[in-house]
Image (cartoon, rainbow, N blue to C red; front, side, top):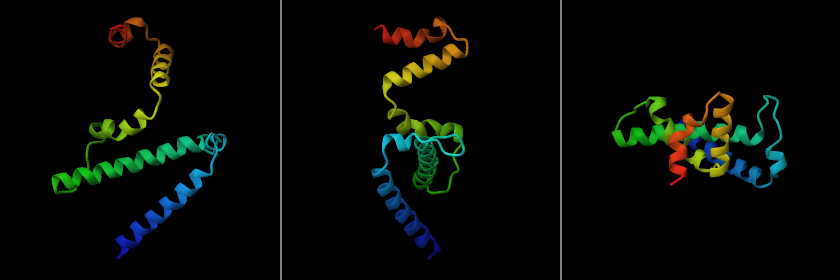
Length: 118
């Protein structure tokens, strides 16, 4: 009975959040919260952790047992929908920017550059 109530509360919460998000402007989504994160970053953070739980549930269903996966092994599967949502040019520019800031040079990007020059 508690589980049914939890699922119903989760569904109700999801409906309320969807209604709220439909009314928010881009400016509102970029508003900074007290913790320093924007509303959109906070929502992405929550979605990431929700996606991890979904991944664990699906993995457990397939294996027929609760299997708390190794986070490092499942991170790519969990992150994929978020990474696909980032425009490709922005993702590439961010990787390059972060790499340069870390002191990387062209030789560090050689594999990527080789693919891009094909």
